[in-house]
Length: 212
Image (spheres, rainbow, N blue to C red):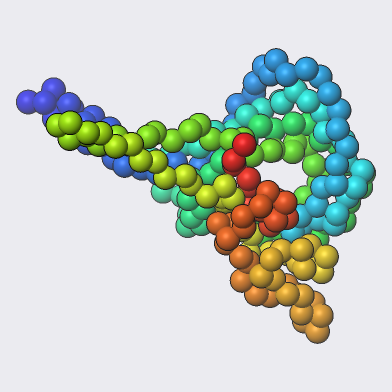
């Protein structure tokens, strides 16, 4: 009886895992065979000023992949957000000159609600292309048809307008407007799926281009 109960619990756990959506990332140290290279880039976002003097070192130092998380014990105090299934990422060492940060940044996730202080950036994570989706095939006695639906190339969850602390980064986010009187960024950021070109997708913070 006890062994039967254990098998039932294990079976239910596997079913729940199969239905769970990977909405977290697990990051691993990697041995990347990519040839050594160095790149310069402009790096900026909702929490920092635009910095044109960053250096990115290849090969990758880490890689992050979507995972699901279940049965956390004890129950964490926070609620967090929902981002859907994230991209995979290759993460590279980055070094930037001193940039301007807001005093503190809100960080609200499953493990708590608090504000954190930023320091120098250490890694730049670049979205990786997902594997090709499966092709569905239906067949009759004498004929067969193959259909496939291509996902949108621009994916992700755009960063909310209220998270932008600088006028330049606020105005660069489609759908956002800088309120000079209140010194805040307002509006609703345009969804990633609305962008049809790689350049416009890349300009929207929180979005990534996944097509070749």
